[in-house]
Amino acid sequence: MGSARRRQRVRSAATGLERPGLTDLLACARPGDTVVVHTLCRIGRNLREVLNLVHDLNGKQIGVRSLADPLPINTADEGMGRIAFLLLALFAEMERTFTAERAAHAVAEAAGRRVGRPVAHPTDKIEYARLLKAQGSSYGEISTKSGIPKTSLHRSLQE
Image (cartoon, rainbow, N blue to C red):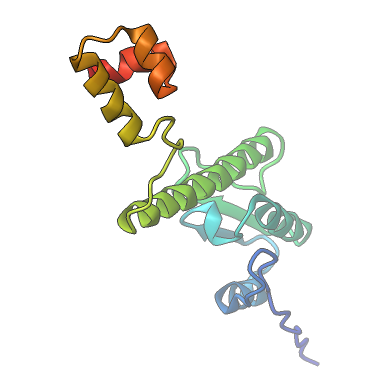
């Protein structure tokens, strides 16, 4: 009798979406195989997903290798290879997070929203301080009248 392997659908824990390509790959992988991916983020959306999948594959004696990582690490190797893989998986998640943050900043800037720290002193107060300085007021007087600290005045009025 032929052994029909039941195909288990892989669903991303982070997004809840099914991943049919990964499902097909896992249905074909056999003990002794090595799954080769371009980057680790392709097999999981976060560190937990990557580690869970690699752990499950190791239990089935299937290794994972990433082409984009600087070290040729196969998770089927024992010892230091697994530790290096864990570090690379951690860095992959960090890079994914940083990429998402950069994309969010780019979208905000494109929409005309200010990104970063809030403005400490409104432009109208700075202009008022410039006017007072042009009229010969001291930094102490300007600070009292505008409500801007002297240190900020020095920085703002030099620009």
